[in-house]
Image 1 (spheres, rainbow, N blue to C red):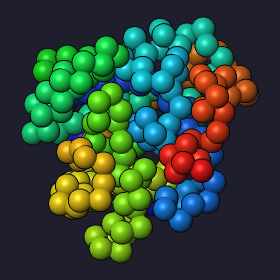
Image 2 (cartoon, rainbow, N blue to C red; image 1 turned 90 degrees about the vertical axis):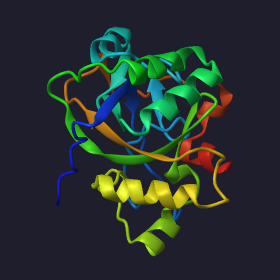
Image 3 (tube, rainbow, N blue to C red; image 1 turned 120 degrees about the vertical axis):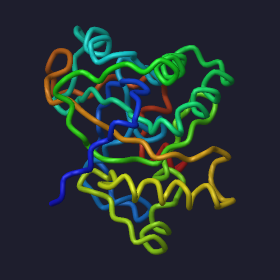
Image 4 (cartoon, rainbow, N blue to C red; image 1 turned 60 degrees about the horizontal axis):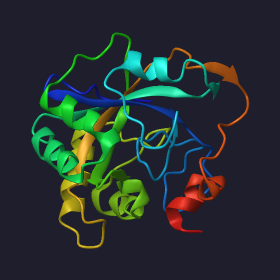
Length: 220
């Protein structure tokens, strides 16, 4: 299986987050993978709370140091092509969401990526008043497979930057998605353990989060 293409020198680190990937129940609108790795607020559970962004990997690790974390918990970093960074930073600042200001700060004053990061793949995202939507939570997957002949990898991410940029341009030309500007972004990860090991999932933040994410995303 081909490895994902690395981000490239023209990408900037937008932010870091701690994600607990959830098992994926079969759904024709999503890639046929057992576990989906994503940074989308619609499709991922985050620690220590929803919407938490960090300026560095060290900050993310410190925030979760005393939390019970399932073994699959990962620190991820989101890298954005420099050409998309100014617009995304402006959208984040305009939304005035406190936790997201980390994104705007990093996008305008890029920070180095900590050593040991491995490319996980490419995602197509759009920022919407404090939320990061994914092309996968906008019913675009099946159409993209048919019309663009793209293929998601074993965790639902695209392997090639060119594929992600093609999907972003195609999604921006449509009128049936969220009213956002779609952009390609690279996801990288570290393999070291996060927090204190546990086999139990993190507690739900509220009643809605008791449902699996795939039901929350589809309204089921």
